[in-house]
Image (cartoon, rainbow, N blue to C red; front, side):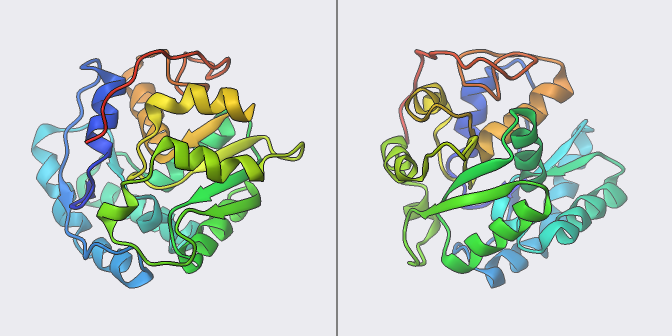
Length: 244
């Protein structure tokens, strides 16, 4: 279940999973700007989106919006998952839950954060992560406090992520989170990890990890989170693909 403006998640999943996991999508109606109000509005359409997927009998449903699931805090995130489980009787995981699981998996508890959101939304993410046992040490806002539309947000390049992340690094940092399903960097995760010397988790990589675990499938070439059952020992990952 992804936002109707999302241009990034489908090609990233297709690139990593390559037909080894069956993934099906429905869209959630969304006003198109990352504000508390618009994210709450999207939640009003979540059951509609989930119901569209019910006929295929999925083994797991994912609400693939990071900001849309962390804005209500830990309890709000849990409530989203419970709503869908109660509606369809199917396991549900949000992108925010996937991110926390991913950071725990690679052993990152004191992280740097690269955020495409406004200060208000980023502060909500920091509070959510702190409450989930992940300490956010330093943060970079990709657009400052500017409120950008979803198309602009999804234009962020891996080079811009690296530029934002480098000043955040230090001996106290054991991981980097790049939040938002609209940021497409999975193919570049190994290179980013080489440059930064810490595991790098993106929202879409965290979602991929959930799907791989449910399917009992492993891949390689996409960094520490996605490479193999132990999710350790990043890989050089030579493959890449064009951005839309």
